Image (tube, rainbow, N blue to C red; front, side):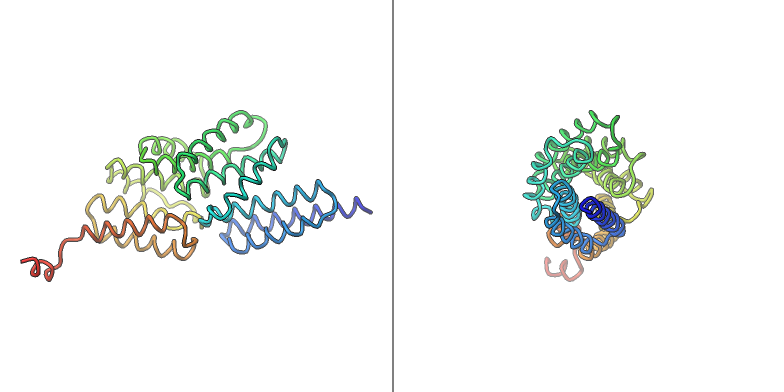
Length: 281
């Protein structure tokens, strides 16, 4: 009877995680995080320690991953670090979960502007992935880690390195990693003053929509247009980016700050109006 209850408990947890994973792909962040937190609370009441820990860890990993994608990495960084410590030394699926948690920790560090730490964490994670990728299918984690690394390098003004990583991994990327690498490539090119190339790349294709990347491509496109002096187009793209960011991301997401900063530069570069010219005379 106890074994039957354990199987039913595991089956319900697996079914719930699959359902939440489907909702996550649809961008239903609030529902996913609430569902994951509810599953975490339910796991704490399970009698068998192994099942209780496994379900709880997976639920917490999902909840914190959604929070990072939403732009709330600062709120869950301590949880990610605690979870990584709990999973240390695990093997099998627990080891894979640890790698996912570490990748989300790197994302959270990047969101906080701690880009050198994010870079160090990601490089260490990539070394670990290289050691085990012949044993387990970890390519999705690897691509997400590479996207985080490219982003961390870009924000340290190491645009050539960010470009190299993004360009080299775009052909095999998909989903959120594809969208992230594509945006970083566009922004990395603009960061080097190669605005024509950046605009061409921005318009080469539009990755499948991913809520966590909301506003990213329009922001990168606006940066390229601004660099080319096409101010009206740049402002329109930046305002589209701001609309998407404010609709789909948490107000603390740094992308919103990036859009506001770019809009300020664009409007500051606008030629003076006739009234302003008259006042100046």
